[in-house]
Length: 523
Image (cartoon, rainbow, N blue to C red; front, side):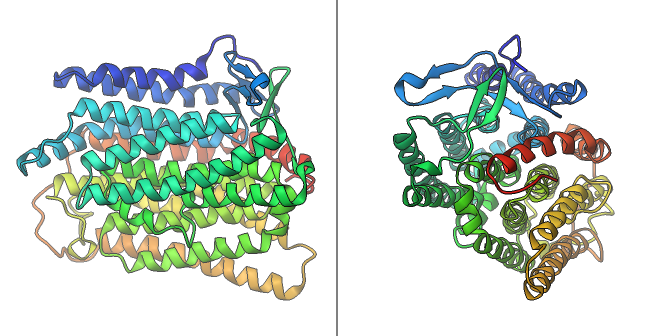
């Protein structure tokens, strides 16, 4: 379906325009108003997706913005924006989290800027924060809308540079060194990814991974006609670059430092949203463009996924810093996303997209929980000094529990559906394989799920229950700070109950990708 108006471009450009207006402002009331307007503009993609689900558009087709740029004569392809059943869960997660974390940012960042000024520093203004935040949020939406590798890379650079500046300006600890570490690692991934993309574009004279045909998005499909050697090299370059972004085991080292020391609202976007977009990219164009290579590497990818889940989950249990614990749990969750993708079937890939949504909501709740204690309990981050906090923060404790339920796949969180689809994908991938492999992978899956439940609920107990391990005078005050967290949790329940349109859209889009790639039948 072709839209009548360029609404998708508006949802990308409007937040940035509001950020530009906010940048020079000094008035607190004006900045607050622009923050709420930014939040409203970031919520618009959710409303568009919901309307398209209600109209049945995404269950059998896609939505395409009418404003596009045909650069075929320059061997670039078409620069267009669109939404289909595969990208819709990603856009839902991005829209909900970026909108409500923007509201959450008001109290948090004013406190953080005042704290920095009291320490004798001169941080950039809150207006600068709004501008960078809006660029970060809007470019992530652009990544989910994109149909072309050049377009994807431009939005990727926008998200990386804006997040780098946010950490450098407003982060904690040795923030300049940490932000530089983040910048170097993520740009190593970006350069490797770009090398593969340029090589592909040079060979096929187009960077499209989705074509717009009769107002619908259609996957380009396999490009393995370029030759097995070239296809293998390009697929390896694209995958490695995306693995760095995704922070899977072996190239994960940057994430615990960056996410732990970033300002908490940015951690709430970095960890669930930005790193998960790499997994979305694998489903969006690596699998359909290079199906033979993905089949050849499936065993390796499954092993890497289980290693990431279990290693990061066990390491997270050793963390005493709450935000660092959350960073390692994010790595573990990316292992689940990779596990779903590695199954190369419609159940698993659908589960990976649902993991994106459940992780976005769950981890946003948990990072904002950490931010409440940092803001209201004198920078409290040490889990060893917590305990008994549910008595003073009953609402925050309930929301944190719901965040952990999303990670562990418990109802009524949407995380339950994501884990069901992942398990179904793994089971389907095991059919007709020898018994030893079936038993081995089944045991690994049991261990992985056990580790996830362990780090979730052991940490929940250590933080909120038992005897207090430090004197905390603060008491819970329900304000917009916590209401924004509550709104995120409510959306998880809504989509848990209204899962049918999401899974129907996913099934249609993923089955098309799987069949087009010659990987077998759908769900």
